[in-house]
Structures are given as structure tokens and as C-alpha cells.
Image (cartoon, rainbow, N blue to C red):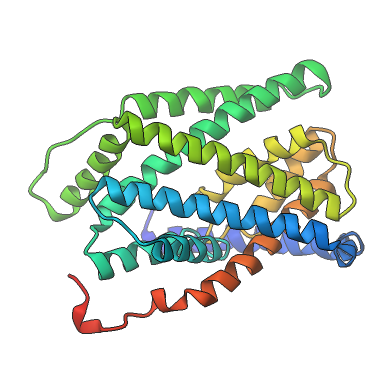
Length: 311
């Protein structure tokens, strides 16, 4: 399949899901209007949770670059984390690409080292999310929700695959080919990170905290919309949000994340519209709050002296 055809298919899928998403937003607009009644306390909690999430993501970035002997300033890692979160909410990995460009331009940090770092972090995040989702799915399957076996087994399969990926990450030799050598560099960077136990457990701790913060943020969003969604369901929905946001099948996960959570919410007995609306509100809060941070750190996006850029 040609690259152009693949892009066309991705665009069509993205536009279709976006259209479905807009349809449901219009359909449930009255329920969304309740957000106007948000209290100062609720907004304050969401603001704090977003700031903590951005801080944790920035701290992860700092830990990963330090592994390659690059120490970022607090301004850099917090600003890059804000920019990454904002742009990733619009287009697939647009924020990650922007961060990698900055690190290359400002510090000469190799793209493939960044790609390997991102891959290692994502694998660990997926694994932690998979374990959590598996545990919750089996709990719901055996206690309250009927017909949840497929979801539980899917999570179990995912956990096994991710466990093998984190335990047996391969290392390759250079191939004297520019493209292959770049890929080898990325895979080897990933392998080195996963085999560094101290960094591995540091990333695990960061990602566990991020999952908890996201679930709490989702729970507060439900409260703002006056939806009675159990906290345990919020943790399950968080794992789905993480997986869907990383799928390279779409140009953007706008609508896809919301629909996916809505479908799982329906299966869990919470209701499709509850899952879709809470995910939508969570995205809006995260996007606009991190956008404010991005505007403050916008100078990170603009080279101050092009002649000093590293190549």
C-alpha cells in the first residue's frame, strides 16, 4: 500500500469518527451545558491535577534525556511537556515531534535517541495501564458486569505481549545503511533504557502516578457533569484513553478517544453518553489549561539565534 493511499485512508477514518463525534456532541449538548455550573473548587482541583500531570510528564522527559547525558532546565522540561500535551491533543504525536525538534536544534539531541526514549516510556506506560485494565476488567467480570469476558481477555493478552516486549527488548548492530542505522539506533536506545533498572522503575513510578492523576481528573469531570460514574470505572476508562491516543491509525484522536471510552462505558454499564461526555470535558480542560502554559513558553518553539542551532 502506497504512503499516499495510507494517508488518505487515515484521513477518511479520522474524518468519519470526527463526524460521528460531532453528531453525538450535538445530540447531548444539553448535558454538556451543565459545565457552566462548575464550582470554583472543582475547577481548582482540575487545574491542580493538570499541572501535576504536566509536571510528571516533564520530569519523565528530564529523566530520559539525563540518561543520555543531557540535563534540561526546569523551564525547558515543563515547557516542552506543556507544548507536547497541547499539540498531541490536536494531531497525532505533533507535540512529541515538536519536542524532538527543539532538543535537536538546541542541544543536538539525536532524533533516534528521542524516538527510543519515547518508545521505552510508551511501552512502560502501556504495560502499567494494561495490568490495571486487566485487573479491573476481571473484577468487573466476576462481580457486577456480565459479558465482560472479551474485554478482560483482551487486556490479559495485551499485558502478556507488553511484558515480553519490556523483558526481551533486542539490540542490533549497525547495517551501514542510513535509514536502517537510524532505526537500529532507536531500537538500541529503547533496549538500553528498558534494561537500566533504576530508570525503568523511575519511569514506572511516574506512569503509575500519571494514571492515577488522569483517573481522578476524569472522576472530577464526571462530577462537574453531575454523572454518577464509579471511581473504579474511571481508572478503566483511563487505560483506554492511553491506548487509543497512541494508535497510529488516525491523524488525530479527537473523537476516537471519546467514542472508545463511550463504548467501553456502555459495556461496563455506566452508559455511552456518560463516557463520551466526560472524556470530552476532560480533553477540553487539559487542552485549554496546557495551551495557557504553551503560550507562556512559546519562545521554546522559536529559535532565538538560528546561527547557533546545532546540526
